[in-house]
Image (tube, rainbow, N blue to C red; front, side, top):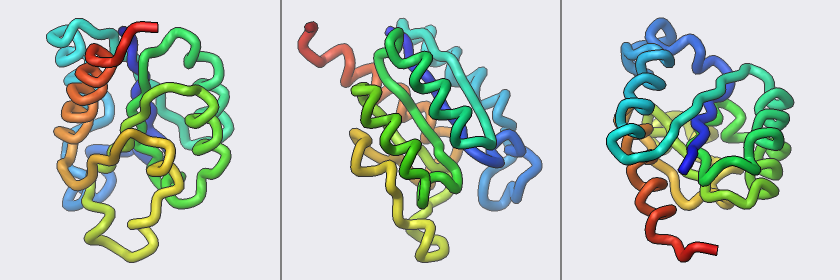
Length: 148
């Protein structure tokens, strides 16, 4: 099994960007933790980050044929990334949406996700550990799913 972890706009600044909200771990550190946990679970984890919605969509379209699932922190695209939502839906893969902060306890506009309707679920407010939880859940879901 192979999973793609996608991080959207501004997440390349983790560790520097408002650590009180987003934590002190860098994106590279989170990606390393995911790869380590992936090895424990017997799954391959690759990562992609872009500040551009078009680049993310291109990557999903190119990578999806070889994937078992996607973990995505869409950043601000959560709220208005309809093209991203469509690309995720078109991929036909299980998706778990992750947010470092609790988007439901922040500004009201942050609580609305256009990605959530095409995701298996959403993990919000658990910091970097939310990515690990998403990986564990996605791996279990894929292992339990009937083989086609």
